[in-house]
Length: 118
Image (cartoon, rainbow, N blue to C red; front, side, top):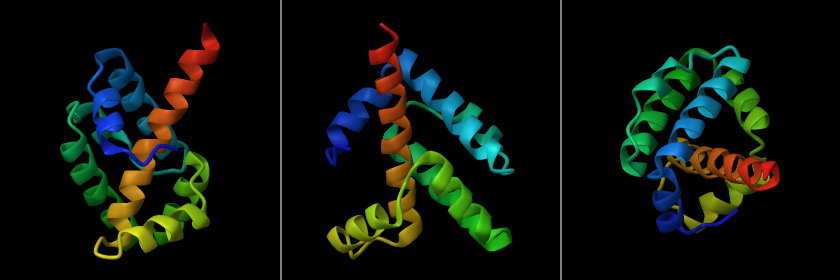
């Protein structure tokens, strides 16, 4: 997984990848029993996606904290990845780090699918 935000910003701004990103995000959220409809209203802007994910994750952690672990497992984000990024960015809160990792991982899934599809 690349830790370079410019690559994410470039990838997420491509219309075809962005649509697939939104679909995958919604699918992952809903497969964990969490409302993922918010993804339909996202714009192809990393900061706004990150901000919205932080809001959604914060809400989930208040009402159904066990769903956060289920969601991270579904998206394929390990506890080790969370710890590593938390160490690298001690000034950021855990929800913000989760949002960043979710964006990266879902985008990575889509790029891999596209690569292996052709």
